[in-house]
Length: 366
Image (cartoon, rainbow, N blue to C red):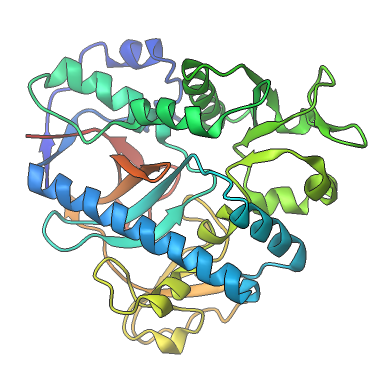
């Protein structure tokens, strides 16, 4: 794994905009960068793929243990959430996708930092934008990227009913692009679709409905479960009959409190890091993380002598510094589509914490 400086395509902005990628620049700063790329060899890609599959298996085993032993309080979840989780897990409600954030330097075993299992973004960039970049810049090379094909195939298993509805906060460009892309892959799988803003979902007294008063049978929602559960209409979820994508059992995996449970269930696993809800259980430097939060929100790095905030709903994970290339801290986002590893996207930053301002940089392997 290495970072190479390269010449950007002269008309790269027009090219990515033609794909529908409108947020390549955020607040005047580049989000999409192609003045560099990350280069892997085939062995490193094989390592990432195997580690992602292994971690996915561990996560599913952890969900099953939590459900069967009722350890919801360890994740800050109440009885309402527990009932939804249990029903969806035992009904085998299928999942669509997720993104594992890994620390990987190309040599040591990849380490799981967190699992964005409910509402992961940076999907369109990883699936489409960097693939077209590869075809223009290095058509003789390859890329760890079968996301698009696997999404279409997965929709054939996950979709169903008269139509699949897609809901997001459409005033957010990144959310809108991600949701529209997933809608397009669903259509390519042969399903009827309908998009609406999350605030436009109604309740008929018997079912959730769209703006045309049609019942919502299957709903992809790019809206976190913890936000959904705080909404007044969440009381109707159990009786609604709506099938959710992602399903309620993903509440367990998208919660960073899963990390201490993974370490408890699978201690010393080479792809896991020591983690606990108590600072004193993890020696040395740690990262303090809130149970819920995205894009680096609330994350603090503590040295070996710092005790942490002591706030509730925090976990402490052993520090696994991101590798640094040319002064940039690189994070590997490894995608799961259904139960299959499907590709990676690289985010990088001057800072060691990845945030929504961190850049996306394409990759290839030879």
